[in-house]
Image 1 (cartoon, each protein chain N blue to C red):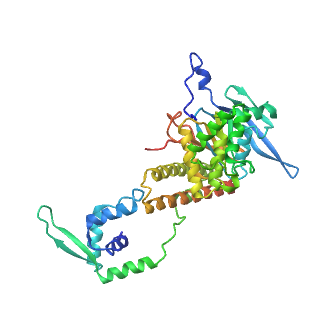
Image 2: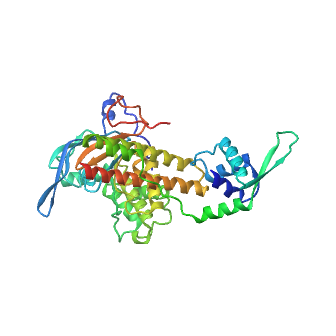
Length: 262
Length: 166
């Protein structure tokens, strides 16, 4: 399984590669709560660069998860546009989103969402098979990922036999099995103890270092501080942004952007 | 500094530089490095106060060194130090004063955002420290984890402030 940085494009297609993985403009989403419309996301613009690790923080009800769900097509915006790479995707129907998620977007949830009556191996292989890979390819990809995630010997277990931390690692393997260009993580350590949290933190950092683009919603500042950039949502809007010094600094003095010393 | 030095001397006699080294070894790099000058000054004061007793040891190739050991009074001081709970960290911090004294809500929100970025940067520093610090140094790792939990609480409190003020 290779998770290296994306290859340098051949001849003349450089601008396409410089394109961000995600662009969103003017996203608005209203939920119905007891028949009363509640604006969860009120006009969000977003850009996620290739290989970037973005954390989304903010209080409960600020719209963090809704925003993530919009980016993964698990929820549809009332208005606004979303591009994944060069494709405009907010106009996609359910079927096209399903294909996109299978091939290009991996999702990790707070409560793992594994299929409880399938083995660990089957949970991980299933999306590979659904994406059209052969049994042999799926098996090989699964074996490599489980080894990489320290889950060798757990192939025949069912999720209920695993600890929370182990289940989340299986979920991560499942999310990564088709080499998605984008990994979405919704409170990935939200139901884990501090050991499990450290584990998730270490693994996300590892895949990020190998070039994986990640967008993660979290309450946990330890997780957020592993990202390249943190945006803070409040009441459905992005109200602040912090960039940790890794890339060259943006324009000096841009409000909200600070560089990490040392 | 007085009581930690006394507590170290309760483990056995030592000279100033040895005390500095034992403190560093025990607490790891996460804890501010003890200043050798401060250690010598404190040892002098402790001796004057009758908590410790110094003996000069002559060395042929190096300057003489003074080895200290606890007196019964020093031993009592350590015992009562360990029996007392320590003061909790207080919210009497500068940020709180800035928040309360800022001219308007807009300034307060800007303060909150700035402070959050500052804490996130500190959190990142702590994560790096935890990763580079010796895994087997239990006290050092516990200290870093404690600092992280405090920071998380500070961040949660900032959120509370923002919810209340917006």
